[in-house]
Length: 573
Image 1 (cartoon, rainbow, N blue to C red):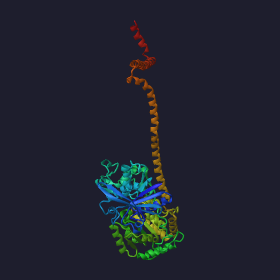
Image 2: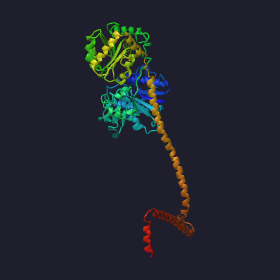
Image 3: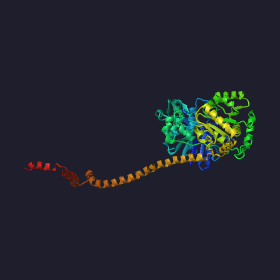
Image 4: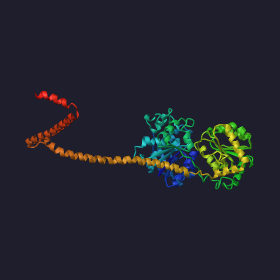
């Protein structure tokens, strides 16, 4: 099967969030199963030189964006069984940032969407399925259906669109997007591209994609409600039969404490002594009190309201009254940068915060912490809790989205569960759950070790998820075959019609020779005149004979027959 991924970021080339992890992990897994998988993404200036030096130039062409014609080059790199294409345009992608700082994001990623479709014939690659990710690729399903599907090369291509975070939709002015992509006025209605008076890249994908997926089953249900739906819940409910949730996985090799060279000491679920060494190393490195009896709570991710940090802000003082330590790594909103900067100074030796993107330090936090806190307001899937489980760090989460699908709160009566969770978005519910985890850590070491081992032995790989994606790809291709069957029947239909016409033509040929002499001028006009009346008479007689026959049958059936006889007798007299 031929599959094309379109995304705005992908590990190991460029990453700002979980989207990059998903694309970078899923594509190689599908390729190992024997499928032709290719990925196209922008050639950002921030892509490391060690990758750009390995790229080869494949082709270049111009992309029409309204009145503008922009250069588009395609560079190629083969790695992990996948062909990676990079779309080159220095004006759009050679900037010192990935997203958001310019006012022309609609033009940058409108160019990306159109360029990806225009590149396919140049690359001589005709995918069965185009799998678009997040709003930056959202216009691809719409453009394909509206402007490309009538072309034979694109006619049978199917599209899948994956929502990684419904909150980020790509909302811009209608006139600007219309100018760039050449989409007519008739398309800007509420059932197509218009969304509350604006152009919405994500809505375009939700309307025109053949199938829609999210990154966890629970999130696929939540976004169909008003609370989580971000004003698109009505559309998602209308398309609920096409909306599916497939849980993300993680790279089980990169995140493996048994072979991870970034941590102080490797360990397995059978040799957890190495985790104690990692904890001591982390405490010393970050300036915390080195004490194996104090539980360390870790947080890694974007510093924003979505991650539930307002709950942490509300109970920070109460939390610091407990015998715990808190480690935070991430970048984001200034409110939370200020919060953790203040807490680090206020509670010296108990709080450590680093506002950067440090992949090695993230591994060390996963390995060195005892607990991992994720009180998200909403969470499409979440990878941090999966990584924490992999490293034997017990997660404390709010039951939402992918967190609810992956973390089961420990039940001391049935001895089931792999972490701790709370349901209501409430700061003190979170604090009580943290206290429950601390109690088990201090007083029930046997249960705590069991939770660690359960987490480390779980299967969080992409194998199961890739199988589900592949099944959906095959279902889309099966729909194409069903659509081709009527076309094949339609191609045979003219043959049958031709035979019917031939028969009719032969019948007419037998009648016409008898009528043709009336039109021709020949010497024996008298003979023609004699023959013509005979034919006419025969025709009229035939018609006349048929008429009485019908009339004769009618009186027999109708009760008026006796009245006709009475009317005829006076005439006879």
